[in-house]
Length: 319
Image 1 (tube, rainbow, N blue to C red):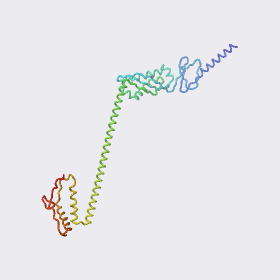
Image 2 (cartoon, one colour; image 1 turned 60 degrees about the vertical axis):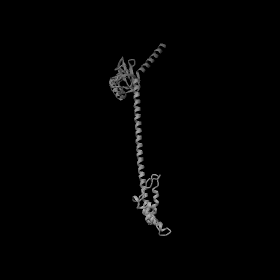
Image 3 (cartoon, rainbow, N blue to C red; image 1 turned 135 degrees about the vertical axis):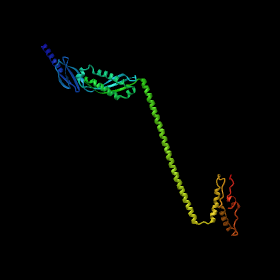
Image 4 (tube, rainbow, N blue to C red; image 1 turned 30 degrees about the horizontal axis):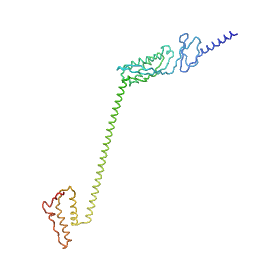
């Protein structure tokens, strides 16, 4: 009995192994390559698949999702003989599992080497400045070459990105100095523009202030002149309304004479010829109020209207 039990156990184990090999479950977005006696038979898609045990074998399982592969920095020589290190990232997707398995031994390594050689061809035709500022152009050119070359491998290159472009250290120092000089230049220009704008605004403010001040002074002068004119009219009207006689006018005229000589700057003043008439009138007025009642005061000779020099006398300098 024991040998029979052992045989039955072996048969059960073989049946279980056969069932396991017969039923193949492929995950979603994956594919499997089936070979029969070493020859490609078919590609298993996602889901439950049945294969012939011990005859069919799974050669390779391939992920059909988009893959991201970063490549290490690669030294590339530019057109102006400078070595730069460029990091690249490739976004690719397997579209044909059979071609990716049989058309190329290792599509990852093939893509990497193709990326390096294509980068050297592209960067070799550019100088350093253009290389640093033409990322989009380099990405587009690199993607076109890779997509065309990897099409027969059953791979589609979706995007190519340059992570970093590192020039030599000495070039980086020179670029930093140049950028610092450019920033200092722009700062100086902006500062000069600010000072210029400030001076312009200040001049405009002073101009407006002077204009407003002049307008204010003009209006004030006009108002003063108008006030003085009104005062003169009021005095004139008051004088005419009061009907003053010649004697009062002569007395007021004589009262104004001392004011003419006021001030240290008045070295010379002229006595008008009309002062004689004023003094005559005033003398007559005083004589009328004298003791005799009708006498008249004699006119001083120095104030005479018919004196020398046309009735005008020069005042001696006032110390």
